[in-house]
Length: 225
Image 1 (cartoon, one colour):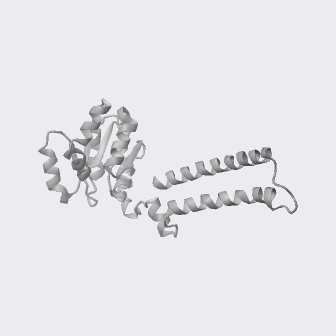
Image 2: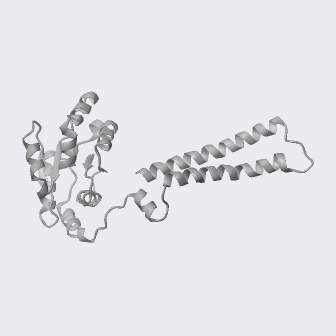
Image 3: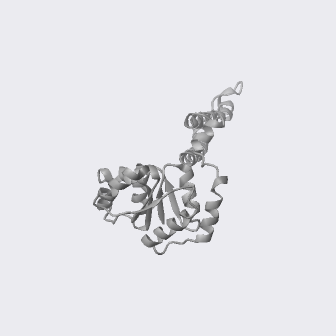
């Protein structure tokens, strides 16, 4: 399993597309990185990381402190940098930890070869096909940036997603209450139902609410991803 830490969604997708047969977890922030380390621990065989994210993780030894607490070795790292990142790269190279570096250059037709070759030197069991990677790299101009689902929802007119989900939940609960209210209180000339009927209605409503709540939670988790 490979952990790919790259804040630029388009770059992240391009790097993933060069290794389509590998299981890659693509993320963009340090908190997400720490979460994945806790979740997968020894299953992570390689960490492909943006040079700025690597500097952020190592500046206060956050990465290494977490690995110490988990009693694991930090995943071996392949650091991806661009020409404008030369200073940051030099700082990391001068540090106490050893990393391999690969220059990301969209105009470089040889990038897939260098990327996969360097990755194999760190992680020999990596599943990669150079020709497929070259083909994917040649088609990169046709790629569209990955869209953050939350941003897409906003652009599609679904702003304030969480608020609207909460509103939909409340509306559903009100709709479910209507037949119960009608059955128990609005019938002309009748008294409210006995306690047993209320108990039955309560559990019926609770079951519907629990089902809806689980759906809403899954929807919120999907949107966050």
